Structures are given as structure tokens and as C-alpha cells.
Image (tube, rainbow, N blue to C red; front, side):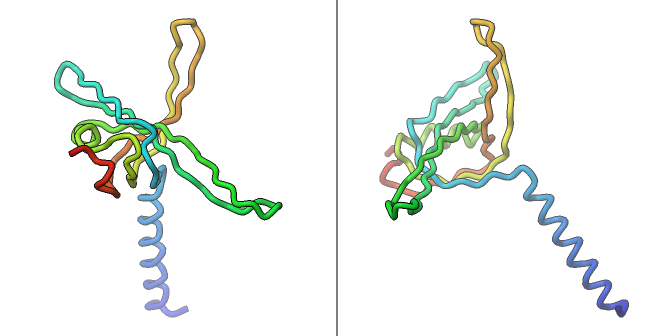
Length: 134
């Protein structure tokens, strides 16, 4: 293999590696809110929004029937993203999100260990104006 060809190949591999690094723990979803976002404000003014997002997948089963399955996702948005979600989103709003998957656990008041998987939202895109607050 000639030196120029090897250099091009190495350049492509480096570019692909950089692209793959940006995909690490990356979640992208489009769906509808199951409820208006719940927003909490902390002492120093920092805000967090908790959002329930439904995504739908439609397929034809073995009997030829059209089936739609809904999957629910727990989203968490902080700061300015939380403020925007609180200001503009309501139940039914269609959004596209990009974020990362996180897991945490805690002990309930009853002493049970609880596990939660959430998506921490980095970007939020409003897809319809009809469901947004006016």
C-alpha cells in the first residue's frame, strides 16, 4: 500500500473514531409528553424539570395486524433547558431530545432500594406549536 493511501486511511480511521466518541452514551428520541413537565427550583435558583416522554413503534404482527407499542422514558433537564421546557411544553407536546443515559438508586422511606434510569437532556427541540403554552 502506498504512503499516500495509508495516510488517507489513517485520516478516515481517526475521523471515524472521533465520530464514534461523540456517539458514546448518546440517546436521541422523538416523542410526545405524557404530562406537563414538573419543575423544581433549588435555593440558588438552579432549576430541574422532570419529563415523561412516550415514543411509539408500529409494526405488523404475525397475524397481519397493525400493532403500536408505546415506550415511556424518564427525562431530566437542568438549567436553561428546564426553564424552556417549563415555559413552552405541555402534555401532548411533540419534542426531539438528545441526551445521555444515566442510572441512580436510592432507598425509599419504607427501606426499599429503588433503581432509576433516566435520560439527562442536553438538547431539546420543539416540534409542534399547537401543544406549546401560549
